[in-house]
Image (cartoon, rainbow, N blue to C red; front, top):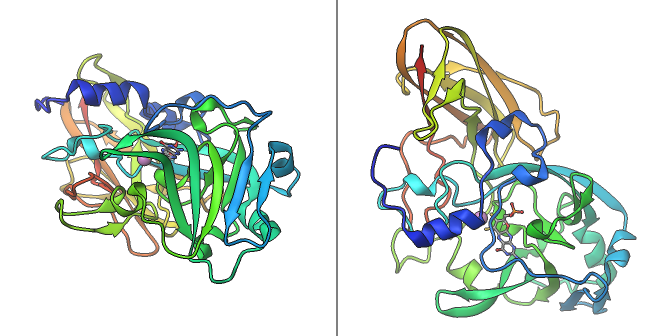
Length: 354
Ligand SMILES: Nc1nc2c(c(=O)[nH]1)N[C@H]1C(S)=C(S)[C@@H](COP(=O)(O)O)O[C@H]1N2
Ligand SMILES: [Mo]
């Protein structure tokens, strides 16, 4: 990062709270809990599980107020899901949208366990005229001059998908405070903001939700007047484990000459990953990487590798890119928008062959 990007103290303050996944952790199929990225708009709420309840209200036959045992008593399901923040890649955009300044590390893969949302909705009895399901977290703050709880909605059809969970476990243990204890929504394949943490209320709405995080935030807007399209599913991305060893300050890499196996993971929330390609000449030419089968199921990243014959001493720019079976691909140039969302420009890593 030689360019002076002028990160402000406010951005640093966000970045120090909301850490990313160190990219060497791409070696792990399931991200260890402390290495999974974090994004928390306001404060982590302190929850007393004895008094905590999940309220279900709005257009339902029976309003519910459930403790954690009641949710654990529903049939439990496990989903391995790769979660990525919609702002991943934001920090290199020019001009830089001022928010959490992610480079590429806002991703992680968890083994989530919970009850199916649709089992709970069945229990409450949903009015068929319902338009949306609103999810409210316990965390409260001020954003865009508006005091609010963190809230997001889904259409009833999306909420009823079988992979959508009310998750109470991550990697075999109760959710840790930073990931939404005691309960969070998990919508596999969708950008991070969909997965409301510290869930306290589910409300069935007759009309679409128009709160800040839905109507203003998390939309692809070209200017302040533009309403933009809402973000939903994750666009494809491949990331590599940075090869060799890093320089402490620049984090540029050094490898010894010879065969270098470049490895990484690739994902898409739209469709299965179709191919991963690697370039060792800054994107001038691309070679097909070896793509492993989807061993972790349909909602998780897949591992890939490519053997590079690194004979020429000096600096090289490595890059990787994925595309999915729905025809979505990674862009070779950044896609600017007001919020700095869904920027899946290819990763570049400078590696010096010694
Ligand atoms: N209640 C609540 N849920 C939330 C958020 C939040 O700030 N509050 N952040 C969202 C965003 S933007 C992301 S990217 C993911 C991050 O989940 P993680 O911190 O468990 O990785 O949580 C989402 N759910
Ligand atoms: Mo996010």
